[in-house]
Amino acid sequence: MEHDVELPRTVVVLGGSSDIARALTKKLCLARAHTVVLAGRRQSLLDEAASEALDYGATRTETVLFDAEDPASAARAVTEAFEKAGGDVDLVVVSLGALGDQFADENDAARSTAMMNINLTWPVAALADVRRRLLAQGRGRILVMSSVAAVRVRRVGYLYGGAKAGLDRVSLGLAQSLEGTGVSLHLVRPAVVRTRMAVGRDEPPFTTGANEVADNVMRGLAKGDRVIWSPPILRYAQLGIRLLPTPLWRRVAER
Image 1 (tube, helix red, strand yellow):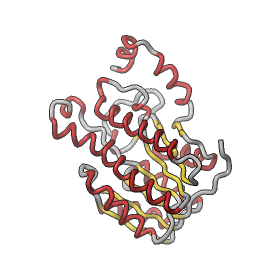
Image 2: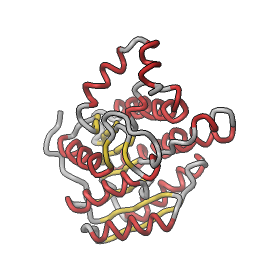
Image 3: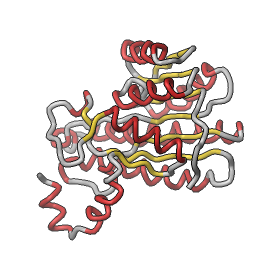
Image 4: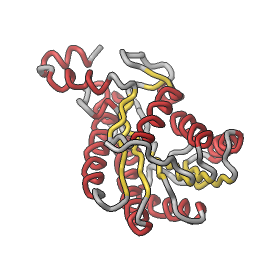
């Protein structure tokens, strides 16, 4: 494991208006980041996040709009974000997600497809272009927001969990492809997080907050951790999740 890795100065955040991304952006700016490009689908939220970044120490912020339901827009969004960064990018954060409504989405092809596009297809398309650009720089880091839901998919959330599982595995493979290049990928697996996206939903064990996730990510980045769990105890709890017999897992997962 690497230690004392230099924290980034120039950051691109794909999904920059999400609660977790905003919490992390503020901490990155407090630590060292001075140029932040925030990309997302709602300009009003991006403007709020950009203002926060300036309040926390950034000297320049830019925004980029994209539609995560349209994977064909990913390359354009990445290109625009890198151009607005105005030079080498130290860190690219990929923090997209939609929980959806499992029991409505699973019987609707368009809604199921939208869940795949937002949680899997758009991020993977963006990662291909991010990978190419960082390799051309010869350095840089990628941070991908996965989920503990990717460890073992639940019936009550199999579209979200399945999409995150796909992104999780693609990211691990991408990380292997970067070995020895000067570019690295770091995967974040948080538990359920108290965000706008999760309002009104039950809070299972290990539920955490956006600031706690951001704190764990900052520590993980500083140490060069390849997989960052939030809360850290999930690193051990997920071993039990993987080993539960299927009938017992179904009973536990339906709660």
